[in-house]
Every structure is written in C-alpha cells, then in structure tokens.
Length: 334
Image (cartoon, rainbow, N blue to C red; front, side):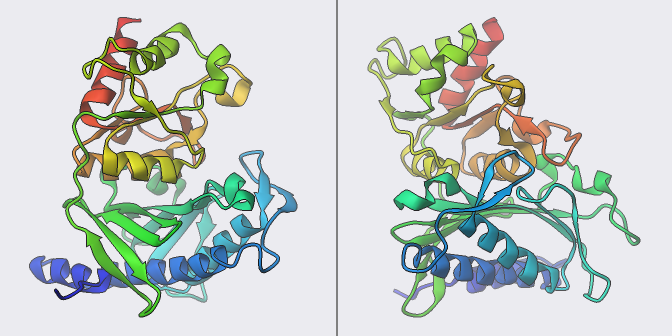
C-alpha cells in the first residue's frame, strides 16, 4: 500500500479548493521542517548539553529549560524567514513577535507553545509542540494586537507535534483530524491515522489530584463522578496523568477520555486556570471538536471565548463529548 506524505495530503486538499494559492501548504511545510529539527535535538537529549535550566524565567514565571529555548529559537528563526507570516506569538515571549522588515511578510499569524511538557524533559517523558494558525484580518500595515486576539473558532489550522517513541504530527484545517508519523529512514511524515474520531464516551480521566485541597466543591464533585461507580459506565474511570498536556491529550484523543485542568486557589495566578488560551487551549479545542469531542472552560465553549490578552489563562476540560457534557452539567448545578 502506498504511503501518503503530509505534503501530498496538503496538495490534494489544495487541489480540491479553487481558492487555494499554495501559500498555506508552504507555511505548514516550514513548520514541519522546524519540528524535524526540534525532534532531532529532543532525541539527542542526554547526549548533548540540552538538558537542565538556562537560568532564565519566562513570561509565565516558569524556569526556562535549555530545550525550551532551543525549540523556541528554531521556530522563530525558520518561521520569520518563511515570507508567509505577519506576526507570531510564543508561550516563551512576553510580547508579539514581529516579522523584521528585511523579510517578506505574509497574511498568516502563528501562535505556538514551542515545547509543551518541558518540565518532564530530564526524565525522558513525551513532549510536544502545539501550534495555531490564523489569517490576519487587515489587508496591510503593521499587525495590531487585536488581529492576534481572535476567537479560536477563527483558526484556519491547528495541531501539534508529539516527540516520543515516534514523532507524530496531528493537525486539522477544519475538515477532520489526521495523524502522520515521522519515518526517520526517509525523513518524511507519513499518514498513519486518517480521519481520527475520539470515542463519545471515555474510560480515562486525567487530572493532577494532588491539588484536591485547592479546588472548589463543584470541581471535587466532577472528579468524584469519574472516580466513582455512579457514572454512565458503572465503574471508575482509569486515572492516567502524565503531566504533559499534549501527551495526555493525545492518549485521550485516541482511546477516549477527558483531560481536566480546573482553576484553583494555590496562588493568584491559578484563579483563572493555568493553561494558556491562545497557545494551548484553542488549538487543542479545534482538534478535539473536529474529532467529535468537546472543550469547555467549565461552562463555555473554549472556541467561543473572546481573548483579551496574549497570555490569557483558562480552565480546560477537554475530551470525549459525553464526558465533557457531564462536567458542564455538574458545574451548571452550582
């Protein structure tokens, strides 16, 4: 059976659209090349000096890992020179990343988390790159922050690269979800998971239960529902929590389940949730909805939230449709 590369898949979709110019395909190809470079370095972690901290603190108040910095710099370097973007935003950068005048400008905006789960790098746990792509709303001139702060429903594409036992790319352009696995022998991402659909009812719940004492009562009720036998499957869900969002999400996407990161009162930073709306929640929400699942902040659809700042945080409940609807029901009662 012939193997389909991600480029071939993109070109097929491009051919089917009379409005396609090929620039979006070029943009994803540049992103894919950056991910291959990051994957190569992740696979050498421990053999070269890319483990540990840099000594810097990022905009989120988190210690920056060396691989974090490497992944961020690779993405910025390659994507600034693509001639396809007008601006970028990274989890690691406080402000909007502009495209220097010396490079050609395009019509797309790229938002990314360069290395999600990087706190697990030193212990060889899966990490990933999450990306979100928008089209700018103005025709010319400098990019305004308002153009970047678009609702998730306006995304033209989103997905992630997962660096683990194999390197995978999972993405959607609003027409289903497809997964590709990197074949290192040929250096190409080959179609391995076509038209991914997540089960409507899951069997897994993923949450850090160490924060139980910091949650409000409705959140404890939600978690208790999945742990008890008084749920739709009449037995406790399996607890699976890696602590790397993209890894937990990917497992639940394939097997069915729900990932939960509620707000808590550990400190003032967590009262609105921990995960970032633009570079984490929005892209994964776009993927899960295209795969038949749902993503909410407890009550509201993630993709309908109007962003008001670049690094806005939100609670996130994402996964199998009926599991997420149950969360909404239980929060609604309160």
